[in-house]
Amino acid sequence: MLQVVAVNGTGRDLTADWIGRDLYWLVQKPTGYSDIMKYDLNKNSGKPILVLTRVTVLWKMAVNPYKR
Image (cartoon, rainbow, N blue to C red; front, side, top):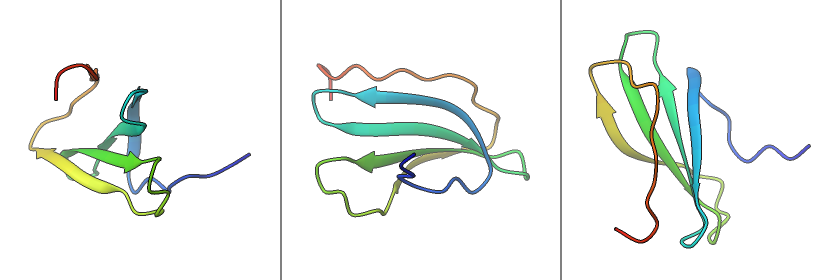
């Protein structure tokens, strides 16, 4: 089993942009905030990027690789 990144919080959803080769996932923090994180599979740097933070719990997401 290969571990790409460690999740700091509770992982809620995972989606992939198969064209841009990016992974996106939702993380729920104990404070009630939700983060959308991104990992670039092309760079393979091991460092995820914070894309968005919300003061609410997000449950689902989807990525449209044709619209950026």
